[in-house]
Image 1 (cartoon, rainbow, N blue to C red):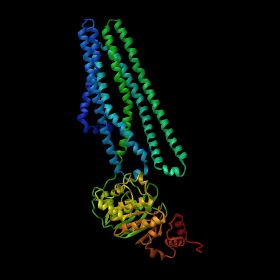
Image 2 (image 1 turned 120 degrees about the vertical axis):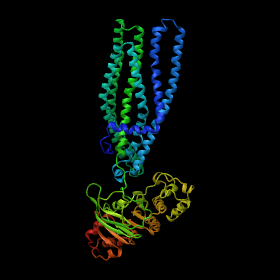
Image 3 (image 1 turned 45 degrees about the horizontal axis):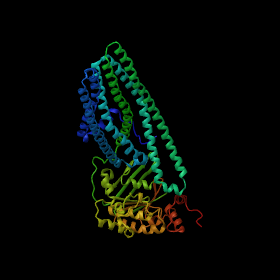
Image 4 (image 1 turned 90 degrees about the horizontal axis):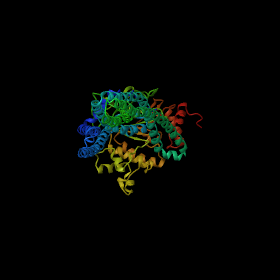
Amino acid sequence: MDDLKESQPPKPPHIFRRFVQYYRPHRKMFALDMLAALFIALIGMVYPVITNKMLKELIPGRLYGMIVAAGLTVLALYIVRMLLRYFVQYEGHMIGVGMQEQMRSDLFAHLQKLPFSFYDNHETGKIMSRLTSDLFDVSELAHHGPENLFISGIMIIGSFIYLSTIDILLTLIIFTCGLLLAVVAWICRKKMREAFTERRKTTAMINASIESSVTGIRVTKAYTNSDREQEKFEKSNSLFREACRKSYKAMARFHSSTSFITDAFNVVILIAGGLFLYSNRIDFGDYSTFIVSVNLFISPISTLIQFTEQYQNGVTGFARFLEIMDIPPEEDAPDAVEIDRADGNIDIDSISFSYGEGNVIDNITLHVEKGKKLALVGPSGGGKTTLCHLIPAFYPVDEGSISIDGLDIRKIRKESLRRNIGIVQQDVFLFGGTIRENIMYGRLDATEEEMIEAAKRANIHDYVMTLKDGYDSEIGERGVKLSGGQKQRLSIARVFLKNPAILILDEATSALDNTTEILIQQSLDELCKGRTTIVVAHRLSTIRNADEIAVIVDGQIIEQGTHDGLMQKSDGVYKKLYSLQFREGDNTYFSDEDFEFGKRGLKNET
């Protein structure tokens, strides 16, 4: 099932009002499109009228000139209808594309504003299906829906009025069949809606599976697990096949039932018309007109039947579009203020936070003065990274408060808060494109000189100069053409260009080898100068010179102080860990086992 669905889908009136608003920028062209559709429908009504006139007047009166003129008139009108249909097909589709473009822009903009928690719970492939296939079906409905309803409605009403002038009783008999058709279509409609909704969900699952497998193709090949990925894909593929089976079964039931009724039209007109002709209620000309007109009547009915499927696709897609649009975005507090350059004093006061079950952060209090460095150490899952995510307000704290320069971050506009915070993480994310584009992402209005200076300070400039295209060199998807150290330097250059007051280093060197780490550490030391810095690390080499060190285990601070101060605690966890690592080499990691060992105390030290 698609876990993106957060609530019950909007009710039809609500959907209709929100759908119609996307027509407003195109209302002039839409009016012309509907006018063209009106003339298409009216021209369609000409043929049975002229047929009746020919059979009852022109042919019996041997008016050969009028017969030819009538035929040429119909031909001329059909040429006009051809041009009108071209206009409707082209401009009508462009209206749909324009609406699709606006919806996609609105959805993408809304996605940019959604909180981190949304992306924690929803897969990229499923989100992408909302932006692509769903909105394509919506655009098709936007074009064909009004056009089909309008043309079919005019032809049905026109046929009824015209045939009523010939014989009202025979007309009512025929339209009773039309009413029966509408009832059958309505009964089958619900099953179709449910089936198409399920098919869309499984389509999203396939998209998510493909996105995940393609993104991780190198890991798959490295572990020779292509069979496992194939198995996972086939599971989603089978669910899609089953959903398609149900949807096509509903479609088959719908179309076979409605087709039978439309076929019955011909039987009705054959029997009823024959009886009326036998009783001299109508003549042969009227009977022939009824046969022609009924075929024109069946055509718009068939169009409406086909439109039902398109309507289900479009409405389902638009409802899924609204499901995301109705998820509340990140919002600033009503009294939130804009800040310029922060000084960088950070106060964390008794904060607690959970992702749903159990506190990940439990009553933590910390103070970091402007320009100072705080190091966070502890086992994986202890809450260090979560604490770093709370400072830029990626998640709201459950209890307590975080302040920057004495101002609660909930009172600061998120954009200006995050503008003052730079983050370098272990898992560097680079955008597909050039080296220049990725560095400039730190500050889009920076000059060429500022960008090059940032690259030099990150020790990446010399490498860039060895490349044929320099800063315009393509780095591939997520920087696949770069080494781990090069990607990390590029991310550091990006932060240099941003020039934030507060810097968060979240295990920025833990994925690098010792030699590369030493080179990257030089860039990081340069980056930290004059900034308030919070470092999450497992290596002593990156935290020993910190102004303060906090040991976090299970979301709580169990020790806090300077390196020298913590080393003076004879029974302290940090000292035991340091002693253990000192014996094993200065560049080793704090592992989770080390922390457990440190908490238990060093045994058998000899």
